[in-house]
Image (cartoon, rainbow, N blue to C red):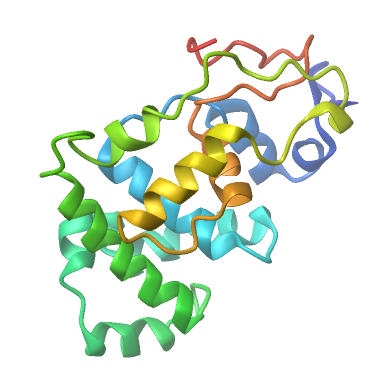
Length: 195
């Protein structure tokens, strides 16, 4: 942990860059339970694959503009012209596979509303909240996957989602408050109200 000028200790990834520090202090790990919010996070985690989170966070306003503020109904209706438009948008990550996956994931999100078991994306994702959260004392103690993230990834793939591997889904679970991987003793530990 690195102690900032404000006296608060943060992990190295959130200690220097003001944008990452603000994200860590106010958003990361807080519960996200709405469909649009979770669709946005699934989408951004997919775009982040192979890149730094700082890159995605800096481009998030452009992603929101390009993808109709991650409205699943709007994105589900995208066609070839939209793919072409998105591939030409320098403000986002212009990766055809990730763009088409996001459109397909929007369609899968809309379809989940009629799923009697989960009744939507939020119900599906939150059904994989573990009975216990990790209790890391050091960064080496923080897992990158869990049995729940493996099962969540498998279930999402079965429902038609792509770019939702176990590591990506564990990162989603951390970001959306399903697990709390803040180090024990961190000022953010337990701040989600979930754990």
